[in-house]
Amino acid sequence: MGNKSFRVVSDFMHHKVDPAIRCPGCKHVSRVTGLQFLRMFRHNYGLGDAAKMLRCSLCGHKGAEIAPLPPER
Ligand SMILES: [Zn+2]
Image 1 (cartoon, rainbow, N blue to C red):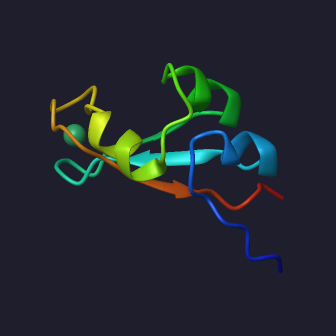
Image 2 (image 1 turned 180 degrees about the horizontal axis):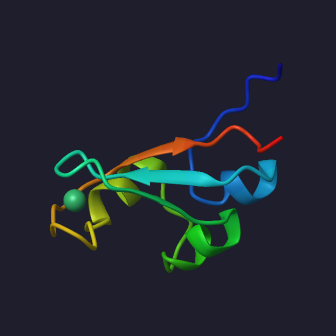
């Protein structure tokens, strides 16, 4: 299995992998496509910076964990 590196928000689209955005506060997980994810930001942020900017739509917790989802089979 390839060990793809995810460093910036556009990497998900390039690798055709969808990101899962997980709230460390309430454990809410949202799935978006790589393109949607890239459009959530105005620039191609590093994933660390992007994670800090995300706010949970359920509990309002600032900051999220971003992880690549394995492709569905
Ligand atoms: Zn939350």
